[in-house]
Image 1 (cartoon, rainbow, N blue to C red):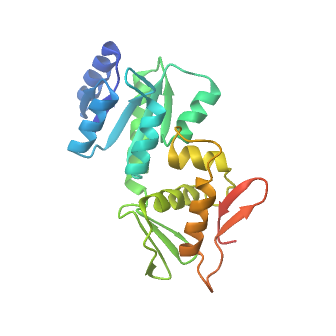
Image 2 (image 1 turned 30 degrees about the vertical axis):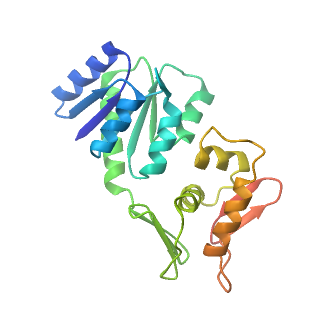
Length: 222
């Protein structure tokens, strides 16, 4: 199992590399967000262990970008921040799991094994009614007809589908799909929800995307 470790603390990085190597893993260490991107461009990793605070980037932002680019990538976030809101923020950014420093190496191994099992059973396609979202091909079809989604439309649909049956607010969608560098007064969500509805909920089709007035949006077939 090839593991990319993104950690700027040399002692922690050396500890992880040595321990994971002894356990039979193949770890590779980088110390910055830029180096992480280069490593991701070069190949695909079984798991990314991502530090929350890096010298050139915020780990949560990198996690959001990585999750958007590769929905199937396994991500374990490490951080010294142990406040509940920090943990929730990390998970909302797309991390599969979240550990606070200091941590026991034995616990890290258990978490990695759990993520391996999760990755092995992760679906490449998600079905809601007659809507199929293919995570590997980054495409969507309804009733067997390809919807021809743009990258942003696919990211928005994936965000809703991953939270199926849960109402998500406009601000949650902005943060999850467009990242943190957005104007809170923008109408991007409304515009792209309208685009998506035209393709997903076309004439004669059962409506899957609903607006819950005052709260946000939800996708479901109930």
